[in-house]
Image (cartoon, rainbow over all chains, first blue to last red; front, top):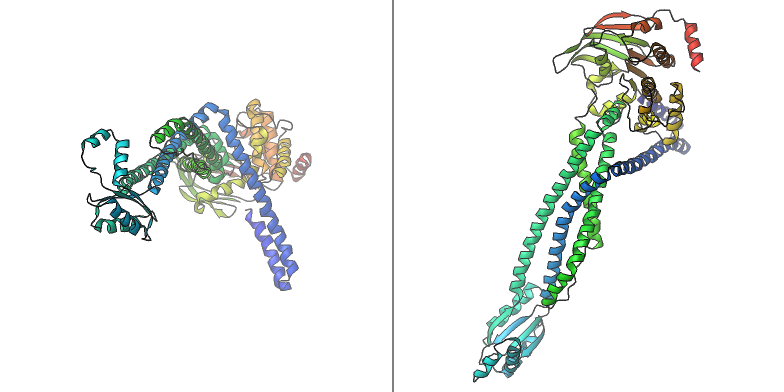
Length: 343
Length: 238
């Protein structure tokens, strides 16, 4: 019914443009009222959204304990995978730092003299894929052995120094192709008894960490699902409590979108609140863990500092909390709103 | 404006609420719908606002066949219809003002335009100055008038009322009926379901009588209300 006058308004200028063969003034006089109406409607729309947004927050603060409990449950569900992620991320950082110290140790055969070993070291250093070499003579090896093991006194019982000379080699680059190339070359050398790198166990550790990361992602997905269900269920109860409001709104011509809006904002606030609470939990956990963590790392002679979530991580956490709250309420609302119709 | 063509309505429970019902109301017509409770009055009104759908037959409102109307279009149909309920259907956690403003807010009207319309509607139903109170603080009759103000505020072309004077004393009932007559005289279609036959008889408007879901009687408007008297009421409203 209301469409008719609008069609009339549209039809009128069309006639004039035909007669005047579309001159500029006609166009602008035609576009002015057309632009003005959507602008006003848009402003009203934005205003109503802000009102519903603040109104839904007000509705939540009317039952502070219940709202806070829901947000806390969401917060815990978000904090759990976040702290696991943080832990795995830190572990990865630590391991990658260790790898950057990656060296190749070449143990010479016992019959290779220090002098010969020195020559070999010089030859190797000339290679483009080798950054530097360091020779550990037989005597230095003996000294190191005595210093670092309790078996130092046993050394005195031996007539001859049984330890070979060794070359510590630093690759120019730390990718596995370069390291593999060097290893392949030195293992072919007749003077080299054994070539060792700390890469193997770093790789194993890395594999474990990668596994843990995958595991964390599964947990993240599971808990995201959980958050959606928590919000969806809370919204379902919220919808039941506002049954009369929904019916009246539908009776006076409220669209599904209009009815849905306050519930979506409630979900939005739950999610955002949950995100903030999760941040607080993770922050507290990191603060408590900092001391013991550094102590453990200190034992490994590492000066690594436990990293907090980056600003981007924090924003991602808040955004995903908000998004999940919104999605959860969307699912809850879509599922239950259709059931509530005026009769 | 309102057309019923061989409408049948059978509820899921098996209850046949309307049988082969046909009638038409032109725009700007006012009519009463009477009959015993259970005669199908409420069902008929619900079909017009698409609260229920006809089982067979067709309901046409303002040239639109409601059978063909999808779920998404129902809100826009309801915006063109003012609905008044016996149980008021007010929101008790909001002020009278917010209750009456609801249809305008839903329609996306800028706030600056809403306030004068709401206050004017409240004045028309005699509730000036009560806009800030909660409906629960008002008497039954006052709550009914809040519901009427809400139905009128958007100036719908069609006004439907289901037992609007159900629990009211005769004097208040007459006042409320006068509101409907006034709205009708402003050029709108008004259909009122009531079992208050005395009141209906005094109004001299068209009367549709339902019995067991069938249209038993269709008495056209009689000349009891002279054009002069209509003019007087229009003036008194102004």
